[in-house]
Length: 422
Ligand SMILES: Cc1cc2nc3c(=O)[nH]c(=O)nc-3n(C[C@H](O)[C@H](O)[C@H](O)COP(=O)(O)OP(=O)(O)OC[C@H]3O[C@@H](n4cnc5c(N)ncnc54)[C@H](O)[C@@H]3O)c2cc1C
Image (cartoon, rainbow, N blue to C red; front, side, top):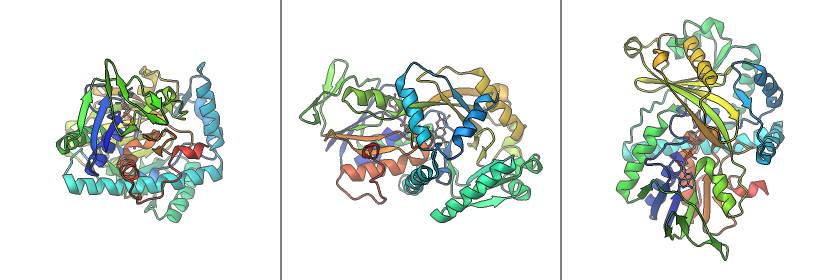
C-alpha cells in the first residue's frame, strides 16, 4: 500500500519505520525542516512502562486545588475562551474515579511494556544509539502520604506483574549515589528496575535516517492543508500548490491532530498540555565522579519533575499547564526546574548554562493514546500519547502497522481506538 503519514515526531517516524518494514511504501509529511522539532524535541527522556498511568487519578481533583495555590506546584490552569478546554477538563475529571483509573491504567501498561520490548528488539535489529540506558526509574517521596500512595501503586504493579521495589534511605543512596546527601530527608522511594531512558529527539532523528535507508520518503517543510473526503474516503492530501494520493493516511500530528481531524468532521479529544524542560551540560566533576549526577531517571513526586541522565547532560522536565496552544517560556517554571535540580544534584552542572524548552503534550482525557481505524475508511490514527509518547512510540507504531497490514496485533487493541469515546 502507498501510505502517507502526517507528522515526523517520534510517533510519525516510528510508524513510518514499522510500516515500511511491513512492506508498504511510506511517505512522511512534516511542517518543520527536520524530525522531532515539536513535542518530541526535549522531553524528560523516560521510557517508563512502570510509571505508565493516567494523570486522571482518584484524589487528583483535591490535589489539583492545592497545586494551583503553590508557587512550585506542578499544575497551572489558564482559562481560555475555548469550550474545548472546559469539555476536556470535565472529561478528565470524570476519569478520576478508582474504576476509570484502573481501567485506563490497564490499557496503558500493557502497551507501554510491549513498547519497551519492541524498542529492545529495534536496538537488536538496527544497533540504533540515542544515549540510552537501562537502569530503571526511581520515584522519590518526601512525604509519608506519598509513600502510602507509592505502596498502593506497588500493589497494582504486583497485580500486573511489573517488577518494582520499595526502598528506604539506604536503598535510595545505593541505587542513586548522587542522592546520598539528601536520602535521610526522603521517606522512601519506588524503584522500577525495568524502565529505560534516552534522548527522544536523537532516537527520532536516527530512526528517520534508518527508515530513509529502507525507502521511506521524508518531505520536510510541507504543511498538510486539506484532506477532502468523498464516499467515506480521503481522496487526496492537499499541500500548498500540490495534491498527493495514497491508499491510506496516518494522522500522527501530535497536538495538531485535533485541528486536522476537524477538517474532516472527526472530534479528537486531544488537548495540548504544556510542559517544560531544561538541559544542563554535566560539570567536569560530574563527568568523572559517579556520585554527583544521577545514573538514570529520578522522579521527584513532590514537584512531579523527572531528572534524567544522558551521556554528558542532565535533562530536567515536568509541569502541566492547561493554557491552550501558547508556547511562551515562563521564567518562573524554568526557575522551579532549576530549584529542584539544585536541591537534588547541586554539583551535577552549572545551571546558568542550562537551555530551556517548552512543549505541548498531545493528551487525551483518559491518558490512553488513540491508535487504529476511523469512520473514514482509509484514515488511521496514532496520536494522543500525552505524557508517554516516547515510552509508547515503538509499541504504538508496531500495533498500527499490524492493524493496517491486516495482521493480528500481539496485544489487545480494541480499547485503544477512537470508538471508546462512543
Ligand atoms: C516537558 C515534557 C516532558 C515529557 N517527558 C516524557 C518522558 O519522559 N517520557 C515519555 O514517554 N514522554 C514524555 N513526554 C511526552 C512526549 O514527548 C510526547 O508524547 C511525544 O513527543 C508526542 O510525539 P508526537 O509525534 O505525537 O508529536 P510531535 O513530536 O509534536 O510530532 C507531531 C509532528 O506533526 C507535525 N505536524 C503537525 N501538523 C502538521 C501539518 N498540518 N502538516 C505537516 N506536519 C504537521 C508537527 O510539526 C510535528 O513535528 C513529555 C512531554 C513534555 C512536553
